[in-house]
Image 1 (cartoon, rainbow, N blue to C red):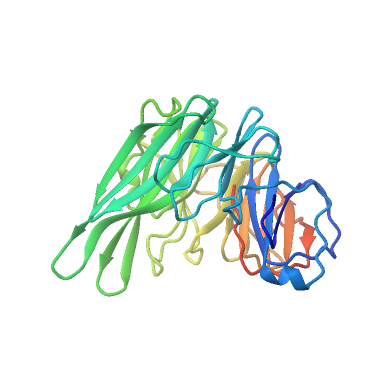
Image 2 (cartoon, helix red, strand yellow; image 1 turned 120 degrees about the horizontal axis):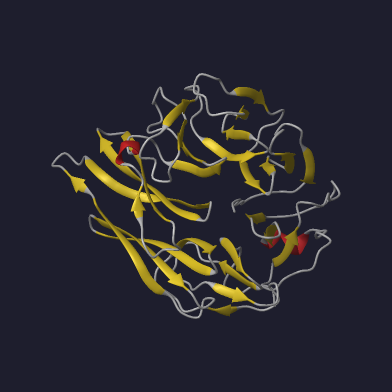
Amino acid sequence: KPLPFFQSNIFHPDRIYPADIQLHGLNSFLMKNTTLILFLAIFSSFCLHSQTTLLPVVPEALPAFIQSPHQVARIGGRLFANFAYNSPEPVYYSDDNGQSWAATPSVGEFVNNMVAVNNQLLLFTRTGAGDLIQFKVYRSSDLGQSFNLIYTIDELRVTDANGNYTNLCHNGNVVVTNNIVYLNYYSQDKTGSSTFIRKFRSRFTTDGGDTWQTVSPATKDFGPAENVIFADGKYVLICNKTTDSSPVGVRVLVSGTPDFASYITLLFPYEIYESAASCYFNGKLTVMSNNQRAYQKSDFDPAVKFTQTETPFHYWECSYANGHFYYVSSREIYRAPADNPVDFTKVFSNYNCNTFSFGF
């Protein structure tokens, strides 16, 4: 049964819902799979004292200890969900579209990322002991009935007598493009009392995790990766700024190989601190920035500038899935075609939001 103060529903972004839907304490999760699904977890103690109109869809019971799904993946008819944020809870699976759930064997570590590729489930963890940071990859080839550790990255932080350090590594994201899995993370260097320099790191596999390669060391002086995209036979790496005060903004690297051994660089205006979302769709590369602008190019010529269009509203979060961008503002969710990101439609509105998570 659902938790008290908690109900779970599936929101289908291809439908338009009434603007007077009332939600309280919204916490949601967007996933991309064969069918695009937005999990909306509604939880708040004041739901007991206020009238709530739920979305016109079928509720799904979730494991009793959770409040919202962290990540979702699907292999065939089996749905996998990671509900834990800061504890080594196991990944759960469902064979009836979420009506019932069972636990997979726990790997004993907090799962930061989870993807399905080649009918296998990959789990990604980060652990730390002293100055040693480890990133680990676990794989299941039997629909989550067992997991094996297949890859480990050891990163060592180096600290000097003044408290400055180099190579303190943090989680990034996991991206699947052209059937290649990229494990992106970043190292952080501290110089002085408040200067932190973030540097891009990445490993990738082209065979489902059997072997791993390192993205070219030449890219290490760029900031953390927002995305890796396969576009018309080329690989596009989008990196954010290395520091808050850096005069160089988002960078877009274009390469003919997945390791980015050689590449051309497309520069963005310095005022773009980070990319909020990006995609390649209908022949256009689009980068949505955190300054409420859409930047687009129809080719990879570094001499041709990105066109710039400003969105008519402020959004907190932006995500791409199945040919559309989704924008989350203070009280609404908007959807727009990826090749025309300012041609938006309001698909969800008028909620009170005190916690929100949005990803895929």
